[in-house]
Image (cartoon, rainbow, N blue to C red; front, side, top):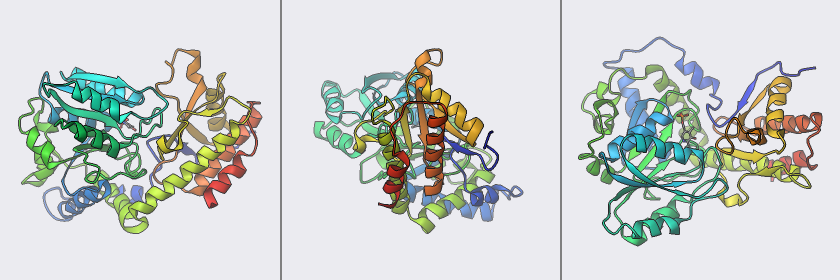
Amino acid sequence: MPLNTGRSYLAIPGPSVSPDRVLNAMHRTAPNIYEGELVEMTKTIIDDLKRVAMTAQNVAIYITNGHGAWEAANCNMFSRGDRALLAATGRFGFGWAEAARRQGIEIDIIDFGKNGPADPQRIAQALEADKAREIRAVLVTHVDTASSARNDIAAIRAAIDATGHPALLAVDAIASLGCDELRMDDWGIDVLVGASQKGLMVPPGLGFIWFSDKALELSQSADLVTPYWDWKPRGIGAEFWQYFGGTAPTHHLYGLREALTMILDEEGLENVWARHHKLASAVWAAFGAWGQGSAIALNVADTKSRGWSVTSATIPNGGAGALRAWLEAEAGVTLGIGLGMAAPHEPAYADFLRVGHMGHVNAHMVLGVLASMEAGLQALDIPHGTGALEAAARAVWK
Ligand SMILES: *Cc1c(COP(=O)(O)O)cnc(C)c1O
């Protein structure tokens, strides 16, 4: 008998669960877009977007998703034929590189595989080999949502600096912003890419780019940029419409205002990070127990290199696909598909899944997903170790 009636739960790495408060804030008539409340509110949003990325520099808001924000970042950083270096730790790194390539940027990829972080020393070696100093930027995902591997951004910055190479550091933090510890200015990030629908808890539709003063200066000569994507008027526009390249994303802004208040002024950013870490620990603990004596395994072995917002795992012999289907039909929980691990037409595609634990999530949501997964493993006779729920419970209160 299906037990899926009740509030369904999309436990995937974005779109994440939006708080009712955020949705209710969006449920209103359109405001005056020329003056008054919206204009004043947008100023506070810009200030708070800088707080959430821990920067005192610049931010631009786009009506787009993460893919659009990638292209926006690229066209402000580069001119046709420029060179860049991308450190890939999963499918999303390749996605960013592919966008850059089609925009006319010559991009070298260092592939660090799907099971761990980038090695800062190998990035440094590539920069040292660039005697002509042609590489304009190093691109890297903070947490690659496909592999759930997390990169040490501060270490990458230090390795770049040690070479004396002037390349910018550009970071995709779409999956980690508002979940994992992230400090743009302290870590020396020049360009930071984000989107609304993950840690920021707002429906898909907004992309963000934070950019350093150095990146701003270099962007003056970037010839790939077109008017809509130009970050200069968005970051430092004289008139309100320029911040959005046209009509403001009115309703999303009301939702974002509410979400930023919840993150920064009510819970507090460091508490938000700590909550994500703790809930991620519960997920890892459950998988650790399930993997005892079975082939169930987390994608990233080293705890320090796992993202706090998403967990990629394997349940072989099609177990991951079967479990996903069971959970949706029987328990009202949707888990994420495995991404970039195997092609959709390959049988191994059904061996991978991802659990999203980003944004507006608490202990009962995560423990509920894990208990539902335990039920599914039992119902489907998928071999697994015991004690997962006890381990997860311990991780939550410990
Ligand atoms: C989700 C995500 C993207 C893509 O964002 P879309 O909004 O789906 O275009 C890119 N990079 C990372 C790290 C992501 O998590």
